[in-house]
Image (tube, rainbow, N blue to C red; front, side, top):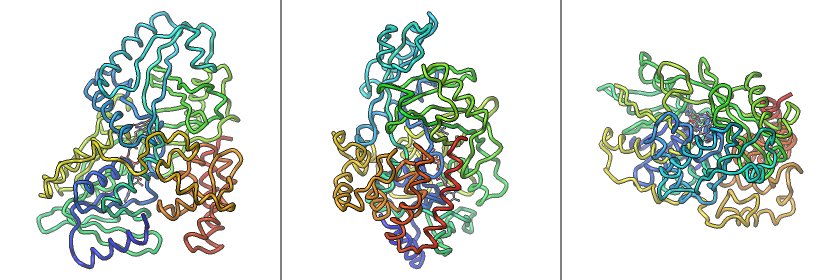
Length: 520
Ligand SMILES: Cc1cc2nc3c(=O)[nH]c(=O)nc-3n(C[C@H](O)[C@H](O)[C@H](O)COP(=O)(O)OP(=O)(O)OC[C@H]3O[C@@H](n4cnc5c(N)ncnc54)[C@H](O)[C@@H]3O)c2cc1C
């Protein structure tokens, strides 16, 4: 996957005046899922992403591949069933990235064991053949065995159930590679800047800008798909300034701690916090991640910031359940994601979590909402619509059994390189060079070889790409990531042919960004 090659293909296609079948705007889970689905059906696809792949919400999730226990309570059985099926398909198609995780709901009142016990049995049942494990009511001793860091006072027992866990940004990069392997052109740092309409008023062209060169690019397409998450309405207004907004935005934050705050391999799930939400504390990449919140916002932003009250809320709520309550000084990183919620009345937590496909009078096809877990199903639905509306060749969807790049069974022996799946061997080979076998920071397992690999094969263009999404350093330990910025900039400069001024500018830019991931 090489950026120069991708841009060259876009340029050549424009010169030939040949339209693409589908042009996708937005390189998050939704847009990349559409690119994979369409390319795997043999359609001619181009995708443009304004920043890096996964810069938006898709790298900022809770990292769960799940049916959504919470939606059961809302009675949304079909949403849960469909997500549980997708959970099973994703583990089947990307076993190197999705694994089972045990969750314990601790019970401090007499009614919680039967209440959650029955609810989670229903969750097991709805998963059917895609089940991840059987839920069970636990004694107090069994609960503490699973969650040794849990507050034992007044604890009565717990309920254990199973869901999936993944690395969101890594899956996204592997989806981009899958799309490219099926012939899609995917370009990062290439924002869509305008939409043009034909004589009948239908969108048939988009303009984009190559942020690295400033070059204006023209992309003609039979169908344009808008998959820009919380920026959905901005894109819709490019085609028609008068459209009614579809979305409202809310944000959710996560705090990351040292793994000692959550001993063992089991996640803690608090089904009802004081604001009526679910709180998870989960083991992830040898750290503990706690989240999330749901704070309505006035509008979207590219790099959302945590609110003080959100940080306090998570510290306070997690602290109530852990023997060692975490403090601000224990936070290694804070990250924020934005939810695109399809408009309605009432509180954001009650708004639809299902995906929505919307066709404007201009023919612009928008797909939004849903969740990471259901990206494949969303893409199938979207491409089915695009085929009908754009009169494209009616090929059936093939992603149910499509292996995602990196597919590898039994990748556990690979240690920290496990997430690369079948690419891990090539990274190990690179790391045989002593300069590339070097660990970039003692607190994190990342090697210089991973940065070189990311620049050569995964279209990493900046220090942020390497530290936020190709590795997850920024999300795990922001101060360590700051310390890694300079060596990483130098490695990238050597690969991408950049000079010292670029290195200095990259380090400065990354440090300013990473400060927002620190809690002081
Ligand atoms: C706090 C939080 C936790 C979550 N946890 C989970 C979870 O554990 N499991 C789960 O299944 N789901 C989870 N979700 C939901 C899931 O993360 C989202 O549904 C999913 O990531 C949305 O992907 P997307 O592609 O629609 O949006 P995004 O990832 O935001 O992608 C949209 C992309 O469009 C790009 N873009 C914007 N404007 C332009 C333009 N002009 N030109 C080109 N590109 C443009 C943006 O840069 C961005 O990369 C969570 C969501 C939140 C907010």
